[in-house]
Amino acid sequence: MPSSATFDIGPIGDLVTEEYHKSDGLWIDPYSGGATVADVTNDLNPEIESDYTMQALDFLKQYDDREIDGGVLFDPPYSPRQIKEVYDSIGLETSIETTQATFWSDVKDEIERVCSSGATVISCGWNSGGVGKTRGFERRRILLVPHGGQHNDTIVTVEDRTRTELFEFVR
Image (cartoon, rainbow, N blue to C red; front, side):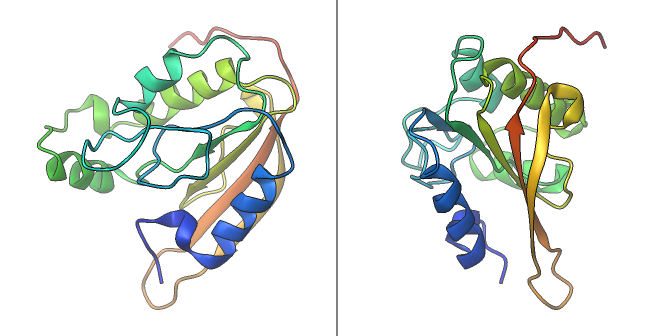
């Protein structure tokens, strides 16, 4: 069954653990949801135990260019509805900015900036887009986890940073 504790879902937890142990570099999790896999965790909800309680974008901005040499666990809210539910649960208001596609793409741009060559990003969601080839990542593995009934599958994408040039995106 689906769970808000994504890494507690058997096959997903196994994949994350396996990938984490392939590297002795620094791993971060900007949307930890209470997961303790990464070396440094962040969650917007102050009730959830994590190293930081910040917006994911601000959490990522505190890292230097190419500082992350292990990887990033990228398990954000999967839809604008989920963003609204998370924000409502902690008393924050959603805005047009938090429910647009740029909510995710801005975070992905920061992930690109902080990851060094060889770093891994494990993305969870309802699509296999991950951080993407245009940001210098090469898809290596996809795990499809069906939950049965009318539940959306969870798609886990594993990508490695292959290109290290930093690009500035103009919007």
